[in-house]
Image (cartoon, rainbow, N blue to C red; front, side):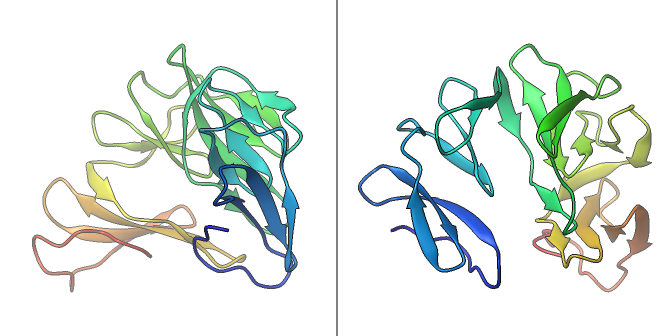
Length: 183
């Protein structure tokens, strides 16, 4: 089985089998996911994005249709969410098995993490379009320890910061020209 990252405790990880099929690794056991079509991409826990734009469960049941792309999943231990861009250019948040429209997200944005999106103009926005972090050049991988989350950010003026639990903290010690990696 191909692997990525590490799992511990009761974590659930999705991964393609070397043979081309898919499975779900949970608590030390791999269970086949026979309904996941070839060419799919593991998204989070027990959901996969198919080449035809559907998010499916291991048995192939479609949970979300017409998906163009997804951002990084967030799980606080009791609730999970994934930002989604649909093929028609609209956005939503796939949260705990249901999709809520994100009508305030501007066209051309990129699903980022949890319930936030990166706009073409460089703002991180909430589903209603409220700007949570302005003037963003690039972001790194989000971090979630179950009690809080953070995303490293490079701003358009070349400075750096950490967007953590809704607040931005400057990171003045980061040298110019650096790349945000992981928070």
